[in-house]
Image (tube, rainbow over all chains, first blue to last red; front, side):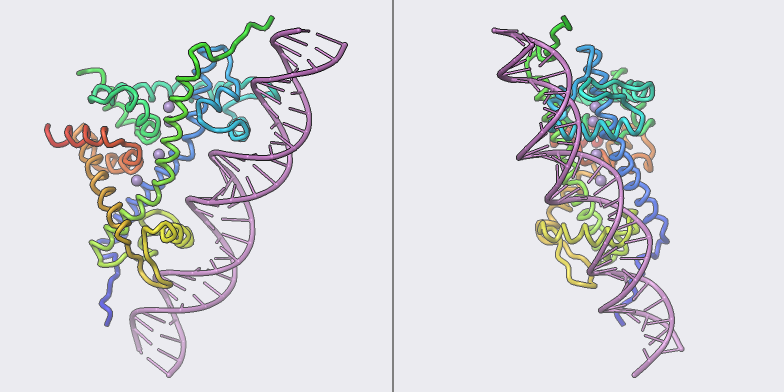
Length: 148
Length: 148
DNA sequence: ACATTAAGTTAGACACAGCTAACTTGTAAT
DNA sequence: ATTACAAGTTAGCTGTGTCTAACTTAATGT
Ligand SMILES: [Mn+2]
Ligand SMILES: [Mn+2]
Ligand SMILES: [Mn+2]
Ligand SMILES: [Mn+2]
């Protein structure tokens, strides 16, 4: 007999809904590194006038070759412009992305702090959370952070 | 002259602090798949009495070989036990991890809903956010979700 | 019993993101 | 002008996570 476990009594709907959620997370992770890099590059340029690979490496916590390879990919994707042995620049697309990431990052951090978290933990958690916050959620975060 | 931009006027401290944050995010991502799998396996066992690779694949939104390879890794890490052509089981370690992930997942979802998000978006965002929530933050989430 | 079919496995490809080691380039000081 | 050193690059390794194609096994129904 081995009782019939179709595991589908409720139709494939809930299974599909879940799959979509995980796919969305994987999609977010595919964009994550690009977002963090352009955000950091924008900050370095604002602060020092230039973004050097060595400074990116120190702040990302990775080695120089890792930064080089990542920057090559970002250049391929049209987010940064670079020339051998020079600092990195953002393309218009890259600058736009950086702007929106910076804004989102700030909102998430402020939200967490407003919720009662210490600033350092807020920064740490925000660095991961920011990439998984939908527009709707971000708006709720913004709202909660401001009005309170 | 090419003015001296050491990019280190504030010492390497802030750079290091940032690096630690990104390293923490990478660490979270290393554990993420394992967490999602054991959580899902526990749910399938609770609901159907067994967790079959095909059901994992449907719900994770990936193909069967992907599930197989991932389960091999989880077995290597001592989180699941498996035999060829059979359903998957959780080891005691795996069951413990699943329990804590399930709890955390629930808290994050309820928090987002309490904040005003619709349930489906809450589920979607929670699937990513859950892996980046520190104990401290989780406690704040729990608190906010309950008392309100 | 046997055939059909669903589930599972294996092999092999690809891209990404990290690393070390070894090399090249640019520049700042002498 | 030379040199020394910091920064950048290149090559090549590893492990993960995804896929398709082709195969094997187990279960179902007749
Ligand atoms: Mn981030
Ligand atoms: Mn950020
Ligand atoms: Mn998840
Ligand atoms: Mn993440």
